[in-house]
Length: 77
Image (cartoon, rainbow, N blue to C red; front, side, top):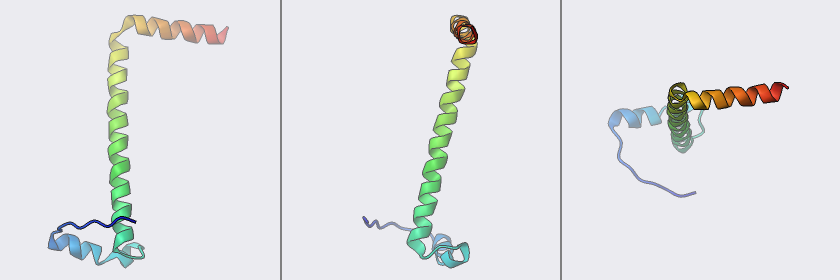
């Protein structure tokens, strides 16, 4: 595993030192879990923003709506 060095505030160090209270084996595991959670949240936010943009485009594009409705009708026949 690659190592990284970074600076933390005292309150963040205190939080890390309570790793066992949160069910982690060590500080490294806690940090990896936190980074993975942050990455997942950022990816989800990006997907939600993308979905919102597609919904907005769809709402404004009557031709696209008609094409979608036509495709749905073809599927049901």
